[in-house]
Length: 453
Image (cartoon, rainbow, N blue to C red; front, side, top):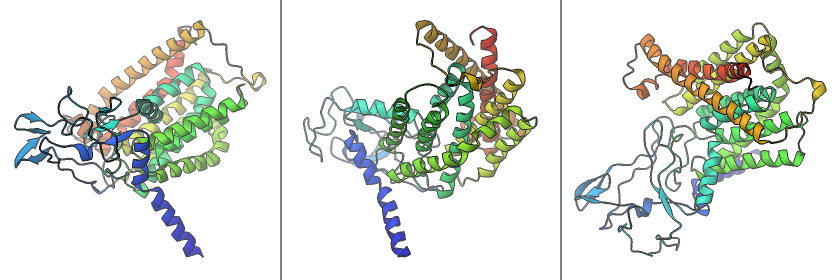
């Protein structure tokens, strides 16, 4: 009985992990690879290598820049001075297929709705820009691009500060605690399970930046679940708004992020399900402790020491990677940001900045949207982001050379220098710890003195 259940469970996991399901969803959404259509004029195909397990299960795409055409070397798709064009590129030039010729799925290659594009951002480990692919539905492409950005650094550096400065610092502090724990545990679990990304082919890599990381669970799905669900749980009852509106927004946010990762070719269905359920489990465990954690960060006299020690210790304990990937730097960046915001919570409490609303004033009522309110919010946001970007640039310029000098690591090539653990961890902690500190302390302090808070 038990062995039968185990076998059925294993079959189900293998089924959900099958990359063909990802490729099928991509085709349904109008994403088609050009692997079978990278042809020269004489029909010779490009040489392609399969996925590589480079000691870390990265599943990195490798593609040669040379191919044999008529017995001669062809570099970067150029043979005998003639460029080999991918379908959909060039100014109406011949693409190796007759106009109106049908592909394997019966569709025509010269459909005006098709667009040939490169993957979003190159891989940060290999600098691989990936393979061109065809987009048949631009709306879904932009929609899922937006969805995947909801789990990237640009979104975090915009969303959390905006919420702190314009909506509710009380909620934002707790939301950051949830985000730090969810992302930290998710990244650590990835490095323990070591599951490779979906194979390409058949999957089309619409995004390449995180392709060097492991795959399960999807931390995008985890953050895309934890942030909207926590936001709803923390604001409903504190702020007055319709229940159905809050649930709809949280569900839409979660579904958009999860589906976007399948669309991008970064995760299997199993990765998404695992990330979604894992995130809910973390919320169930940590949500009751949020008030205790926040009260400790704000009020306890030894909070700064414990905050720094805990976040540094968590990072050192977890970073035992067998090969470099973006995972280590991203996790250190998250821990540093969380430590900086927690320290800022303590400083604000001691100085009486950004005080919490008393319970007698709850529930809070959103202010009517007026042009003056919108302008004030945008002004706060723009000035605050400028301060944070300047902070990051200055700290980055100071920290990397200093750490390289301390550990005797050449810093001529900054990208290679940052792959050393001795450089990457202090750099990420210090830079983003300072950014987090300034986001919740320095920016509100300066805006308050300018009469904008």
